[in-house]
Image (cartoon, rainbow, N blue to C red):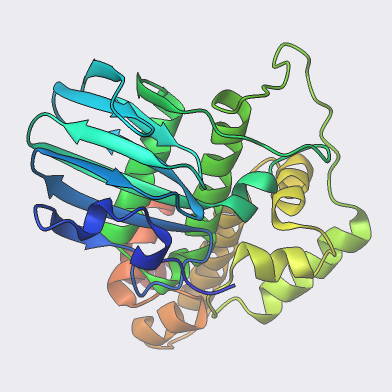
Length: 292
């Protein structure tokens, strides 16, 4: 599976009136493509794409009309409103005003991986709806692009998985009964030991959810659910905690330059280490070193 990019989209982002701000192009993301931009009013028709489209309106309200083979509906979409369009589906759309948006294009493989059975997950056609969790996930993805660090690969993977899961759970044609609690099975001792061995061996390297899942023989979505059931936190948060603990040990125990400590523990640079230590421990590398 290669990196997702503009070629996996419907073509909206290639229109001359779109003014790009940033995107995930070049970051190696395989499950989704994220783009933030300013859009001007337009009306156009687009062929179906291989990816599912999720648009978050950052401002507004703005009038949007949509349909297939002709516009049939219009709606005022407020800030925080969502536009959802399934893969392999033609799209006719009219944007009635200037608008800042974040587009998320999700691969169908990522959406289907959220299914608990063999039935296909089919995304609904929606616009003007709101979903606070999806909104926060899209904003978090935009934040990852804005402040990209290679060490954030696991976090980006986790956000992609959570976005796919929320779409499948709340915005698919067939919704699971959410009133019935689902028993979550955690990783076995053997699987967890294999993951810890991999984390310890490659603490200084960028790691993806696929890397970690491969150590357990599970799919990415199964791994993420079972890892959280076992540890109580998602994989990216657990990995950051391990890196923070190792950095603190090295800083307290030796004289290795702070920049080398950062590199040895998987942080992109000294400033990245400082920022994470402040967030997690309320201190700095220099202060930890002085405290011994």
